[in-house]
Length: 341
Ligand code: MRU
Image (tube, rainbow, N blue to C red; front, side, top):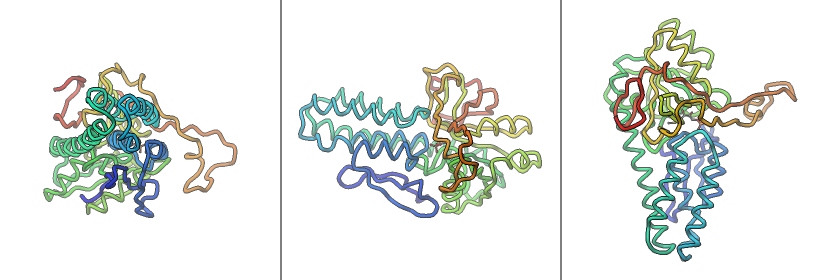
């Protein structure tokens, strides 16, 4: 799996693969400031719950480089500003807040001046990134039994290498099954309106040599009715204390279809996606994005000028539709408990 969604530059800035440009072009961008990282997150150049947490942590480091010679108080003041800025970039994925809170705690607890604090934050952001890579691997190992030889998996959006620091969440069991020589095939929902499935998931699966078939979002039900789907694997942006979870718009519909057709439906996520402070999914803030994402395609209008369009980026799947949660700490069967299993 050679896809690298994020890395450091030699000078402590953030290098990302611009996911808006895929699959047409593989463009790497160097983000030199916290503001540039926040913009990249807002514009979906960097996206996927775990990856935006990693990017925000690294953005905090990039944005404090010029304060290495500053006194402690000025450095910490800038950290607070950047935490607010980066934390507001997108509301639904809890990983963003989780990573920034962790960075802010480390900054406050580290003695010394700007240069000591900066070095410590650089190390912490690197640790968040490396831990995510390891968590992805463990999710893959725990989910491996769900992907039998010959399995047809259906996935939505992109919860693969492009969404994480490692081999993905929902796609991690697929990659490990493929690595072990099992025959696995993935149906990829195109994922309207921004097409993360078509542009990103199909791209990275093909890159890895995993057989896949792109389908329109509306085709999933028909395939399940024809018994062509063995298991649905999706990612998550936030899992609540009761197991309700938010993921890309369209996930809820898939879960209902899967239940109706008796297809197992799994949510895969690292523990950094669990928000034990929220009792249920109605409390998750759902990002509303620009209507233009719905009324245009590749910059061209696909709807009459002036039409009203609604564009919630995520929906909530109630826990009762979930067969199990594939986490880095193990395969969790319902009822979901938000403390460590
Ligand atoms: O709007 P996006 O592309 O950031 O949405 C991403 C998803 O919904 C993913 O499924 C989720 O973040 C899990 S990524 C491992």
